[in-house]
Amino acid sequence: MFNSNVKNILLSVLVLSILSIISCSGKSATKPTEAFDAEQAFVKANEQIEKKDYEEARGTLLEIKNRDTSKKIAPLAELRIADSYIKEDEPELGIAEYKKFLDDYPDHQYAPYARYQVAMVYFDKIEDAERGYGWAAKALKEFENLKNMFPRNPYRDVLDLRIAKCKNVMAKYEFLVGEFYYKKGSYNAAIGRFDVLLKEYPGYDSEADVLFYTGMSYKNIGQKDKASEYLTSLIEKYPDNKLVAKAKKELAAIKK
Image (cartoon, rainbow, N blue to C red; front, side):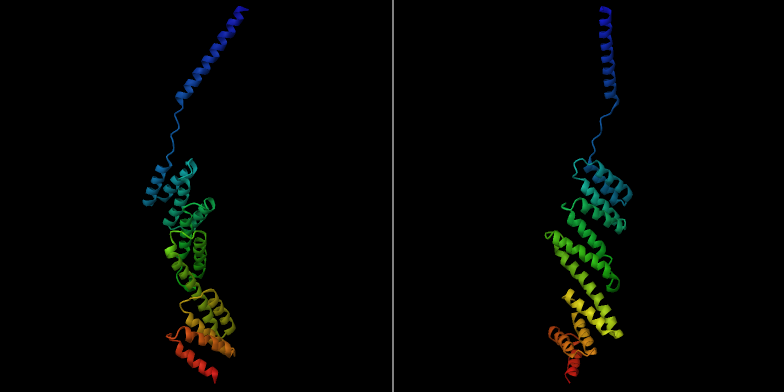
């Protein structure tokens, strides 16, 4: 009995000793995990972008997104990924990343920046009225969303100018289409375009031309009262315009 108890005690001591050795050896073999410095990595990513090492920069930024436990730098990393695509002249990929940022962080302090960047990608693609209508419409939508959602955004000083240009490009397109119909003799189609222009784009910088062609379109379909209305409006609103002399001549002819 005594021998059996001694054996059990010795076995227990041996097991505990082995466990202790394993535990100690495990601690000495495992190196402590090095803390990830998200801020330092973000600085590195920006340096890579400056050097135009865009792929490397995006790799660094993705690591920040995955390892930033504080979640303070991760949103900025996502934003800079979008920036890197814009700098690399990959605007569609940049837009996709900005929109992803807005989906993930709609109320972030840099949300206005992301919206403005998307709008500017579209805005910079506007060439002229004939080829720029679609881009102007997209840019206008983004600018107006920015203005409505973030009325105190840091771009408000230039926003109205950007919006005005978009609207002017779109109005010019409507005018060119209306003018095309007018010259073709499709006066009702021309009137339709000119009416849309006058209603949706007040303040168009060539409104005098619109009023003249609208008046002339009505004259050519025999609606003299409507023709007189638009030609008179042109004369009263733009007395110094070069079309006033023609408008007065046409009015005189209508009244005969």
